[in-house]
Amino acid sequence: MSQTVSSNNKGASIEIDRLAKTFGSVRAVDDVSLTIEPGEFVALLGPSGSGKSTVLMSVAGFERPSAGRIMIGGKDCTRLPPNKRDIGMVFQHYTLFPHLSVGDNVAFPLKMRGVAKAERRRQAEAALEIVRLGGYGDRMPKQLSGGQQQRVALARAIVYNPQVLLMDEPLSALDKNLREEMQIEIKRLHAELGFTVVFVTHDQGEALTMADRIAILKAGRLQQVSPARELYERPSNLFAASFIGEMNMLPVQWDGANATFSEREHIRLPDSASIETVPSGRAVLAVRPERLSVTSPGETGSWRATVSDVVYAGAGSLLITHLHDGSEVRLRVASAGQAPVRPGQAIGIKVPPEAALLYPADAAR
Ligand SMILES: Nc1ncnc2c1ncn2[C@@H]1O[C@H](COP(=O)(O)OP(=O)(O)OP(=O)(O)O)[C@@H](O)[C@H]1O
Ligand SMILES: [Mg+2]
Image (cartoon, rainbow, N blue to C red; front, side):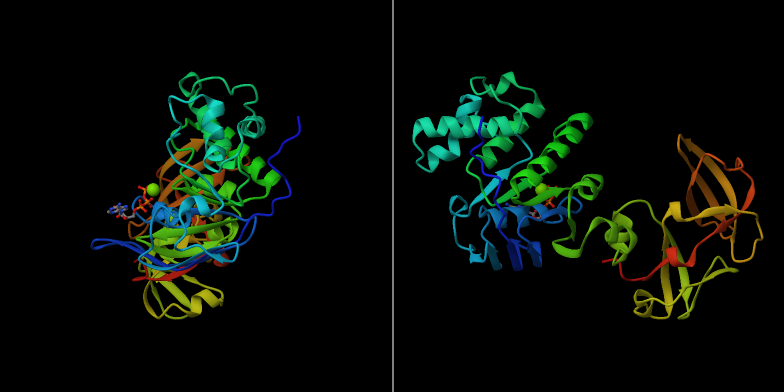
């Protein structure tokens, strides 16, 4: 069957320009600017209450910004109602109409847009085929599983071929297997149909695997907008560093070249642009557990540590160690080909200087 949801849609750009939204005294969104390219997949990631939904609802038109501008496809939409914005929306809960059949649920936006009945049916069935639910049109929502219901919600969001798809934690109500299946499904649809996606999640793994770029929010403010790898390898501040993945954080004294901690241990850091911006004095040294390795205690340049715990986890092991001053350092090491390490053992920890990140101590906001 030919699919009427066209595949030559390039998606629309979205420009969020100095967006602010206050609810009483709460600054839910505080001066957020973000430009999203046509066809790009951007995840909004952040802790609960950081303003993710408020940003999304402002783009959708369900929230009226207190300040700032929303442009979609180069057009100022700040004052347009949601149905005039050429967007599809999927929410956390399926929000299907329980008294309407699956087909009528999917056709609903078309009905709102005055599409004739026969054409509605045809387009709804095509959208259901795209989410692999062809033939389910006559069922009622409650006769479907959670994952199937969320696919119906997805079909309803794309049925009128919008240039932008906005999703607010669309998978968080699903169990792990279904969630992973739907992640793949959404990525496939995105590749096939080419719309621009803004995807809200507080699951960092989901953001890292799905998005072209990830925007991190904290307390209504944008912290960093980067592709996954850059965000993981070069977090731009302490918050981003601690929010994504595992990170060892050690308080240090920084003199412009050496970071000293634990009374005797220090590390000389290679020159880099990010280090130049850290003033001398108290600072935080951050290093990912998988960048550290075990060496013999006392080896030049290594840190002396005592192993407290070894957690075997199949392909790798987690070593929990303590430095001389009591600070904890975690290592992720491959299980294969390593001499076994035991609790109580003295080891050296080898730290590649280029893996060490340095932040001003008071940078956590
Ligand atoms: N309608 C509202 N009235 C008052 N305060 C609101 C309203 N909507 C959101 N807020 C507040 O604005 C802030 C941001 O909320 P928002 O829902 O955008 O966060 P979120 O990042 O989506 O969180 P979550 O991950 O829990 O969904 C919170 O402090 C919230 O309490
Ligand atoms: Mg939310």
